[in-house]
Length: 187
Image (cartoon, rainbow, N blue to C red; front, top):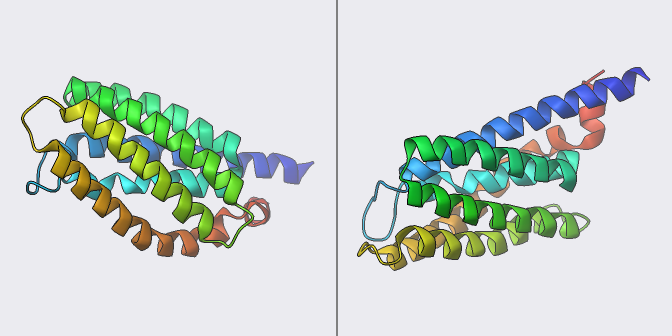
């Protein structure tokens, strides 16, 4: 009985960390996307891929239902903060892209979780990132006169690089996101 309570406590703590991390990453990205580096990139391209890392780690540790909670709660918190701190069009575009892409990521990761350790996070992030990029940049910047197509291409290129780079922290954090490890450290 004690283990079940401890695991639940550890799971709740992990869930809370995931929700907070998601809200911070998405809010920061919504602000940073309004700050171009050049005609190909915005600063948001460097921060947003961490959202996929948060989702994938939560999915690995707690399963798809809890990962969806992180997505939904992170989405609400991020949209509210983004409406306050970022342009309204950016917040709406971000919310639409985020929700679609993150739920796709959760679904694909879960379907691939039995494959080699790297396949679920890499493949789910590659596919979900492409959906996110198309939805976000077309809703946020189409018709504005800004170089949104090149920003989208640059953003997706950075997402690909970040997927490759973030697979190392994912691997390193696997021992902490293993459900059995969470159960034993919570005792």
